[in-house]
Length: 162
Ligand SMILES: C[C@@H](C(=O)O)C(=O)SCCNC(=O)CCNC(=O)[C@H](O)C(C)(C)COP(=O)(O)OP(=O)(O)OC[C@H]1O[C@@H](n2cnc3c(N)ncnc32)[C@H](O)[C@@H]1OP(=O)(O)O
Ligand SMILES: [Co+2]
Image (cartoon, rainbow, N blue to C red):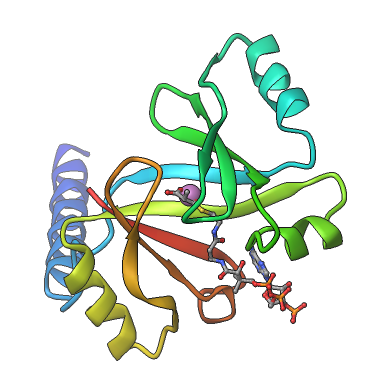
């Protein structure tokens, strides 16, 4: 029995080291970092803010982001953030989404990267379209770049310099 157990342990550790090595050998290993936020578009920023406050969360004030055509509110979670989005100005990139989703809904995820310029080049080599030519400064004062949802399994992805 003891030898069966130790054989099993050996097999499991071999599997683990194999999978670690397989991951480490991928050319883009380590490209994706922490989940910075999940964004939710809302037709009523006050109501959405109150919803999360009512659940005991720490919720920021609304901040206009004219460069992005949105107002942002951040809800702090122990391991990440929720970004509430509401249109700012005439040509908001979230307006069409809200027209289709009247109650609002999940809009994008934001993943941190070690080097935004390297990350943008890397995703382009994979044929993933970026939305815009150059990164913009995002809500946290760091460079961000959006990737087309049609090239990312139907999910709008924001990359943010960590
Ligand atoms: C402040 C900053 C920060 O955190 O630092 C932010 O987050 S700013 C957050 C706001 N900024 C952004 O979102 C910037 C990047 N977004 C954009 O450029 C745009 O929103 C697009 C993603 C290109 C969508 O543009 P628009 O709504 O005008 O186009 P559209 O309605 O023709 O949509 C084209 C197709 O993409 C789909 N589509 C649209 N928005 C989507 C979304 N959020 N998630 C998944 N799919 C989406 C539509 O359903 C449609 O598919 P079908 O053809 O199959 O129906
Ligand atoms: Co965002």
